[in-house]
Length: 611
Image 1 (cartoon, rainbow, N blue to C red):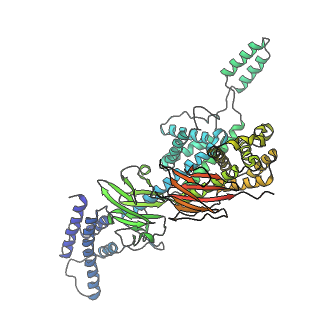
Image 2: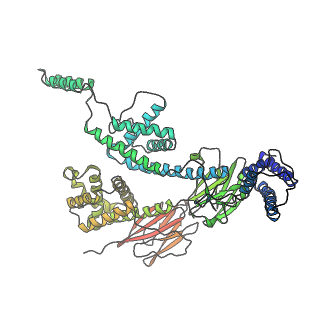
Image 3: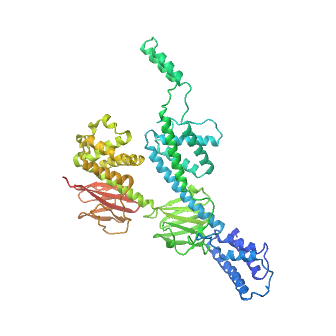
């Protein structure tokens, strides 16, 4: 017999004392408190059903007592008199009073804490994602200034935690010891920032360290004037040029050259920008104090106030909270969810996807991502409460993927000796180094004659080359938030002598790829979807059987080969492997094929009519 079963037995015994007219040990208040604790406890289904039977007796007893008091207001009670406070407590235990003006009901402590914890876990997961994405944007900065500032602040915050008085100053650009270009180093660094933001003490240290960096980016050298005087004196020494050069190098090695004072202003601006961004991320943080849970928000809840009658009746259709001991399965968003307790863990089955969730792990490790096709579901657990969150970012990812494919299609257009591709390559240089590069850059490698290699390349090689260039362009445009992009693009187009119409089409494609604007419909099980000719997409779900799309009077089939790889087969063209984005060139248009999970989407970009 476990502890919860003993407590249910105790509740039954105490209720029996009340029904017999006896005062249970601990008083009447102890029965109400025990009931409140059991209603929010992680009971197995059999024990939960037994608790509900006992609870119905408890509520019936209180109801009879109230009705008897109303029917015979002058009659003397047959048992020991009950105080007004006790009666009010019993009434509150049966039906909790809603919070004034809020429309929300205060619940048991366990349920309220679990609700708050689940929302906090979801926010922290979103925080980690946002920081990882921001880190990639900062990684595109020339000299990694923001990352150097953040790295210095993290190091100083860690030293402050160990009571180390010596502070690190912002290192110079491209310091080999930092390796800020490395993706793994960046990931660990941004996760460290996320951990600091969710800890009040760590965030206070990190904020102080950022303020310190802003105040003193790097120290002023006391011997700057001495070094300059020695160098000037060495220049006037009456020695051979070789000896003079050796003397100057010796002096420079002894007195390190001072850093550019203008760098201080740039570091201060970067520190302020980083601090403002972190403050903005924290502004959306949910409270950590348990509060009221909205009515009708938890499936299988033991409390009538918060019980959700149907999973489809949730206020947010993309989020479902379940009290696991209250049931064993449900259907939600087209998925069949089943669960069971195994030891101290919970096993969850979403369609064919299975996961074991361990309640004792830290929150970041407890979160599980499941992929029941075609969905992506984030699973959070707090005690016996589970939250399923349908990832709406999948739709956003598919839309952004469509913008990237559109940009690649424009770059792969062979019009005017691949003018759009040549222009995009030069624009990437201008975005990185400024328009001054147009005067210094050797444009010979971007003339129409240089496009011969694109004509000779295979479709797979050209697609890989254009995709890499498109992703570089998009990341640099996002890093600058689109500022001066159009001016830089037009300047690069003028330098290459590209038709302004091609420049305009590339600018539009860059806008779609960097900031969105294309909507891809959700996938369905369809036999032969028609691909619209207006640039929109058609979507379908694919399993083991092939799926064909009707495209300009012909059928393009997506099917798996002998290796299990998904291939796009278009009559008259070699089959090409589909990973996530595929662009197929045809004489008058490009075919865009996207894949995410079990969803495949097909669209077209029609070549403009020549003037």
